[in-house]
Image 1 (cartoon, one colour):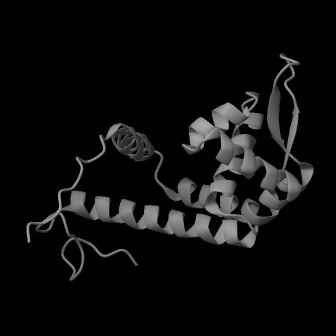
Image 2 (cartoon, rainbow, N blue to C red; image 1 turned 90 degrees about the vertical axis):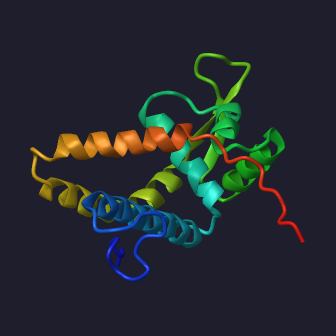
Length: 172
């Protein structure tokens, strides 16, 4: 359960009773639950979290009819070309991905999810997504635009937040 600002252990950053702090606490709890879910899913599919992120990226690009290239996958994951090659070797060997010729550029390759990967994702995530949609539908329609704007603004903030300056060692 997520602790609110007024509860012991509630908020490290903010003092006092404030529903905005409770909103941030709820968001933090959601992010932690999402992270833990992805860890459990990747373990259940016998892959690491980077492999699962790669599979999700490839499937999302298939749905968007925008072929996923190994180079774009490497940029998305923030890993080197050599690491991407090893990742693709693993996911090809496990039957989750295939490298196929690019449909518009025969000289290059794209990455696609196999029928096995799609079946595994549907089997493991289908029920969860149905329940998530049911929960979203419980939000009053008039409140949805504000929630959508809040979540998009938070995502933009997190995507554009500069990395912290390098930490200095404490003086001894």
